[in-house]
Length: 350
Image 1 (spheres, one colour):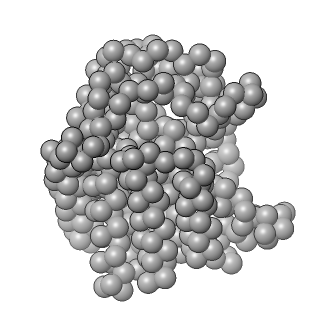
Image 2 (tube, rainbow, N blue to C red):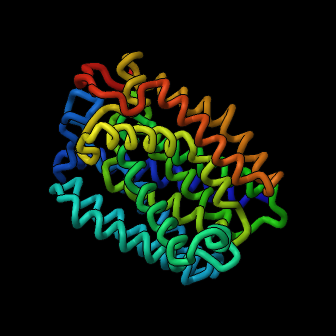
Image 3 (cartoon, rainbow, N blue to C red):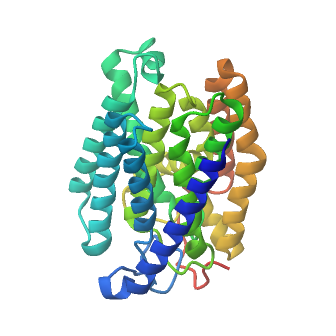
């Protein structure tokens, strides 16, 4: 029954891996080099922009699915159009650098359009609108998409971690939909292709990374996972609470770090290395150990909780909140947002 989905996954992985190799070969000529700075966890210039391979693979597959009428045309247009714009501004930032304001305006526009198109009256907006004014609930969702875009950028600081998180969220979502939902929905295409593209990129990004994702990839994945979560929620395929549970580790680390920096009146938007995963990478002198730990926590703890939220949808909101709080405490214990980011390590990816 899932033969087509497996073929899509393998095709996406192969195309993404090949495209990443092509970008890696030409990164120097294109000026796509990541130079270490105050936020970096590496010490040598490294090719970046490899996330473009994920973008091209995912957007092409989504466009083809829409043209074949596998997905609603308007929804696919919102996903592809807004995702493409977020990726484009990220690619420009990778190439030439860009101030915060134009990036924010592009991200805000993409968030507003995607939320406006992808939510439904019977979906998460209706739930939020019960205790809140409708305009305020809409604003909460827009901020959520904006935060997802930025937190993926913040969390893309060591080898393999952002691609691994996106690969897990997409793979786990696809498994939950395939196993617990009957009949199989065409919406399964989106997490399957996203997972394949991320695994293909990981061939080159796994510690020690030969190429980095860049803003083109991290911003796109942050937007894409949030927007797809809204679309799946509206379609009744996967609750937004389940998607939140699947992304809880990244959300918790980034949020705790941000709140602590704001509480100390630091310039929270400036480059830093105070996330929990960065502290662990310095403490262990290893990117690989931290990225492997992410996989272990996601598979052993997050996935069963997400599966439980699908099996018992009445408790899905409580499960998401409890999971976020638990990982928030773990991130706090691991030093998320602690003052003093440490120096740039001379060892990366070990």
